[in-house]
Length: 165
Image 1 (cartoon, helix red, strand yellow):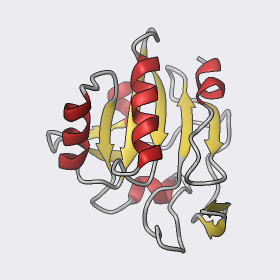
Image 2 (tube, one colour):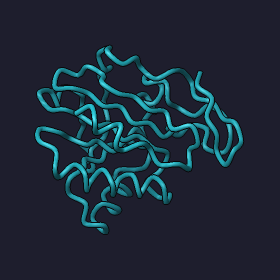
Image 3 (cartoon, helix red, strand yellow):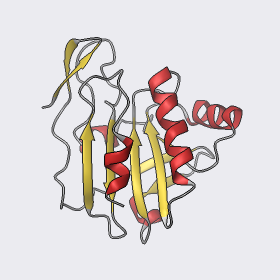
């Protein structure tokens, strides 16, 4: 279990992030058209998993904007923005912002992605949501980089995540 903070107050996750060098665990997430996305859908592409509590918070929105900006310059790279928000909220946000270089995916149905990746918040006011995490995968689904942001209100280290690509 990882210990992170929310406003300086300790909160915990249900486990630890997968290890660098290991294979990413498959997932079933909901796309904005309500179809299902799996890890296999992105085989052959490098993948940035930008994971956060909710698109309707300032830091989460900033991370989606920043990765959208950076993704347009990356060859053979997909940025997946993953939260427990409803797909409708994700689609509304990106539509209103004009963001076209990221793919929004929702874990709203059962939270299985957050549980399997060890990043579900287990206590405090955001219990049940995802913690702020960035995981970078190579074309074969091998994990190249992970970051569990220590303070939920802080942005991830974009440069460190993108440097492994």
